[in-house]
Image (cartoon, rainbow, N blue to C red; front, side, top):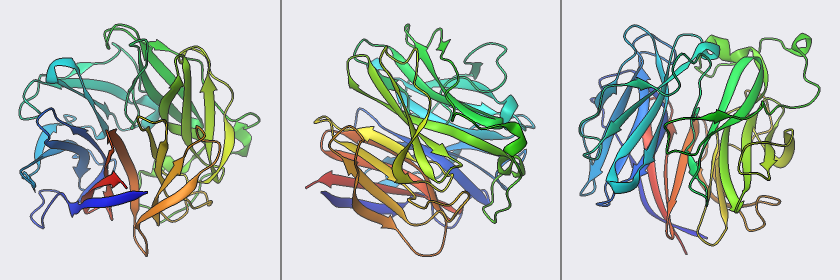
Length: 337
C-alpha cells in the first residue's frame, strides 16, 4: 500500500544532548519539514528541553533549543499549522506528570524564531491541550486536542476550542470501567522512562480523527494489552467509555491519521504486553473507520526501542517521526502505491 520515499535520521553524531524522545512534525507551506522533540541527559531530567530541526533541500539543520523549563523538565512537544503559515507549538513542563502545565509558542517564519511562552489555560495543573498527538480540526472549524491525566488511574479527555485556541472546554474523563486504585501496583521495566510512569493503570495519550461531521473518535495507549477506543457523536463534547480494539499495545505511544479517502493509517508497536518491548514498529491501515486493521509495513524490527511515532498525511503522502533508541529521531516519508 505504501512506497517508501525517505528513510533517514535527523541528527548526526554531534548531538548536544545524550537522550531524545517524543517527537512531532509539521509540513510547512514551502514543503520543508519541521521536527520537534524533547532532549537532555535523560527523560524527566531538569535539563530536558524542547529542540527542533528543519529539513530544507533534503538536509536537516543542526538541532536548536527552542524552549526550556527554567529548572524543570520539558515534555511532549506538538506542532500545529495555522492559517496563513503560522506555526503553533504546545509542550508540557513540570517534574510531576500529574501536575504538568501546558505552554505555547508561535512562529511566523517556519520555526526559525519563536514567541515568548504563554500558558494554554491560565493556572492549570494536570496538562490541558494535546498531551503528545496532533490537534484535529473538525468540519465545523473546532479544534479537538487529545489529552490525558496520569494520577494513579490514567484517564483521557478531549479539549475543544471553538475560537482557534483562545479558550478551551474540557470533556469528562474517559476511562476503563472497573479500574480501582487498590488494583494499581508499580511495574518494573528497563525502558528508560521517568520512574513515576511505572505506577498507573488505564488509558492515556489519545489520537483523534473525525469520520463524519460531528462524529469524532480516539485511539488510546493502555496498560491492558490493547489499544483502547472511545467515540463521540457531538463533536468531542461527550464520549463513550473506553473499550478495547483488536490491536495489541505495549503501553507505549501510537498515532493515527485519516487520509482524504477515509483510510486510517496507524503507527504503533503491536505488542500486547504492559510495558513490553517497543519493537517492532509497524504501519497498519483500516478502510472501515478502525473496526478492522491490516498490517501494511514494518518500519523497524529487531532489538531496540522504536517508539512514540507521530504521523501526518498530506495528499497521498505519509510523514512520520519516531524515537530511535533514544539517541536519534527517525524521519520517514511514504507514498500510497
